[in-house]
Image (cartoon, rainbow, N blue to C red):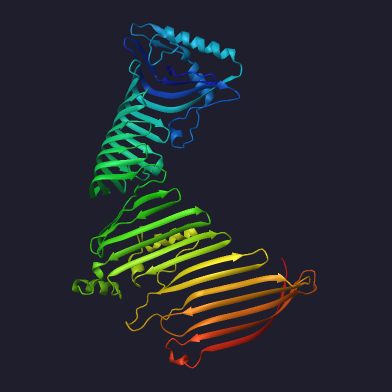
Length: 576
């Protein structure tokens, strides 16, 4: 059988909208006092929006999915039309039958069928007067259950058995519940909510739907990963009381974080993000247990500064080492202007060389560092300044053992390397490299065939040295390159050049400034064959070094060196 209930709303000249609930079931029974309908067996309630307006201008009402930017796919209009036109004989309390069509169905405020019939006829007449009007319908929400009682006066629906609600981005299942159709609120027992955003699953002994997409949960669970039927979650949150707000947050009271059902952390109050938009809140934690570090828990806190910038804090507790602080800052102006910097610091209890209990840690791991304050700062940035393209790479590590020890987790080497590769197209140096490069490069090219590039490169040398010595790694402060290729007046000869200046600097060993000039002339020869292209070039290269011995006895008698070379080359090429 089928039964339709209309929600009356204001009518406007340009469009007339009617919202209705359509009920279908194996058996429908209508009672007049009180005005109600009992539906049994495969009960389906559909909230249908009918829009009547001119063919030239058709306006729709936003549904619950629209409020969060969801696409709502309309139901099959032909099927909806057939359902809405179907009439079913509903046995009355006294055994009589009554035929009720959609346009004559009682409203939520008035159970007088005669008044409803007059209203339906009036609406039909008004529609006939305007040949340009069109009518369309869409299913906004769906409710299913085994047994339903609809109270027309109260506008409530009681549900029992295999209860299911589809309300856009949320899917609700329960054993029983009560739904207030006019207020769009509800209460469910032994219920589960599957949220489209964040793959969030909410379970509760009692779940109350307090608004369009807001909920109150008693004795509930929050699970944040997709699960197969019967699969246990790897982690979850349990709360005695919880609220999912319209702003997209889940506020938990007396919450416990659990790993495979085992509680590992308690908090009287907890806040979690519960929708897809960027927002401040705790991300999901990472926990581990090892013989060396003991129990480890890292719980990131995401702070949304603006649509183009954010900060994430990475508090990391290690039972055997202490507390590691971590932070990440990101910004993105556009695809060519973005940056990320990540930093971690740990006052490492295991690296205290004055503690004899740490001897086993050094012996088993083969570690050689002696510093207790351990850190790692890494970052990358791409930035466009007018016509200048700039690249920044940062990689500063406290000691040579750090990257081996802290290679996993949110702040570990593996995750950092992958994230930089995905975001910037370039990752970190191999973790076993002791000379960590820190480089700032800016480049600009012009339409006349010339380009200018400047680089600052510093080396963070992780190799162990004595107190009186320093690093022999070469840094460049700065390196400047200027190159170009231009035609020589109106001839077939091209003039090109490469000019380079660099200052090599280091703690220990000779330092130098180098100037390298390399002008060339190149000309294309007449074709030796229609399949070959031939060019010849001639050039001269002058390289001059200005030397600073920097305490190196082998270079104390030299302050400059010069090298002059001539080069001639030819090229023969073909295109396959």
